[in-house]
Image 1 (tube, rainbow, N blue to C red):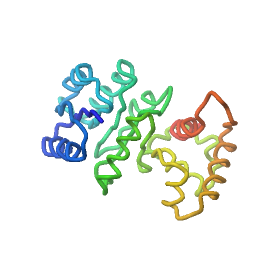
Image 2: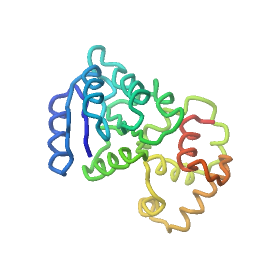
Image 3: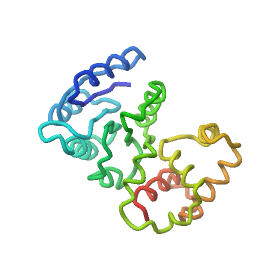
Length: 213
């Protein structure tokens, strides 16, 4: 992958760059603010940008706003929000049309570097990677049909939001692949997502979960 990193913490920024380089990826730019991020993406056209949510000058939502602009100007670039904070402002706009190619992981919850790099690959390839801790904070509206989901179905949907396949979900939950298939089918039914040759039901299910409708 060709990666741009945007984080004002120099140790994290440079450390992440070195780790990705050691794993065979190319960090084309490592910058400290949103303005430099915009220039780096326009210049290098990376596969993915790893973006801190809070950056100079105000340390509030600069990274999120830059990601939203990237989504409009460079729709083919994957976006991985990587932060200590859950900031829902603008995130729903970011995934309004599709959650494909978007991730949001919390720094303190990344315990395995290989899992993190795998998440980057998924997002760069058009998948999703959303930390389950992030999802409840994004459900700002009415729960609607989400109330129909069982606790286990919600757990499966959260793992779907991370971009996990059915086999990966089965391994994580220590259940059979057939059990996961049944849960996924129930989720589609309860969320009103019939089979379609034009729509990706897994992405639509994640969007429905994010929107809380």
